[in-house]
Image (spheres, rainbow, N blue to C red):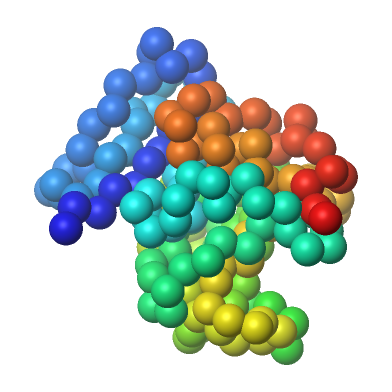
Length: 178
């Protein structure tokens, strides 16, 4: 089965051409365009989570819970600096201080994060699970800009669709939860 990861740059899509990663026939990545601010990738393989899951509201604050079988590979959605997390709420996870100025948090990995230090969009960061305060296997995904949570749904849908994602600071801070 072919696994797809999608990455897009914040630039005119006319200036971006999709290329297979060197040495890999199992992933897609967009080529950096001159002047692109950041490259983005989906946090899970495209066929692992249906498009309509990416726009689901979180139950009580700006974030999204993506249903995923335990052990599904999670990927850095943006390049930056990864720091593993291990606490009672998040469980095992990772925080990525993104090159776009946002902080991305992934929670409920089945084991400690596999990434630490510098990561690029699309790099593996851990395996989904059910650790911490969780009621079943899934990937909890959230983003903060200057300490404020922003709704990731619009950005994730743009990445999924191969469109130019909005800047994290341009995303709403409410209206993405029930």
